[in-house]
Length: 136
Ligand code: UDP
Ligand code: MG
Image (cartoon, rainbow, N blue to C red):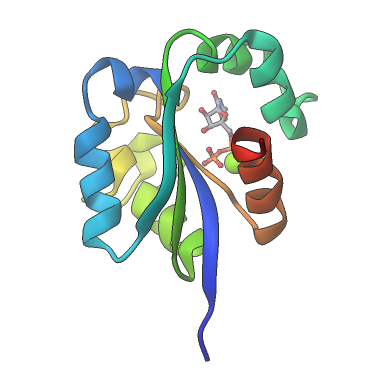
């Protein structure tokens, strides 16, 4: 049975700034994820607040929104078998210190907030996040 999925990936400002976008794209491509759409954008704090609204009650919410809107980001739709879980596996744990060897966050993450990438965590959120960046 096939389980073809799409998920949203974001290269966050810390990684775009260090010119890591191409290296991160290669990790996805080399692991059977296809980049079916992508763009480099710079979002406002209001747009970041909308994107991260599931975290609005968290103590780090305001800083998180300031950070995601602090510079250009590279957003991608990844497609492949089990793409949602595969992307999360390739990303590694939220805190780079806890991430497995060779994951994106272990290789490139600076700290728990500057952790280089975002990835949708469920089919439901993948759809919401893809629509947010790529509808119209
Ligand atoms: N974050 C943070 N401090 C924390 C936990 C999370 O700054 O204590 C940031 C971090 O950049 C993370 C984002 O908030 O990527 C969203 O948190 P989540 O728990 O959803 O982690 P993720 O799904 O990105 O691994
Ligand atoms: Mg998350």
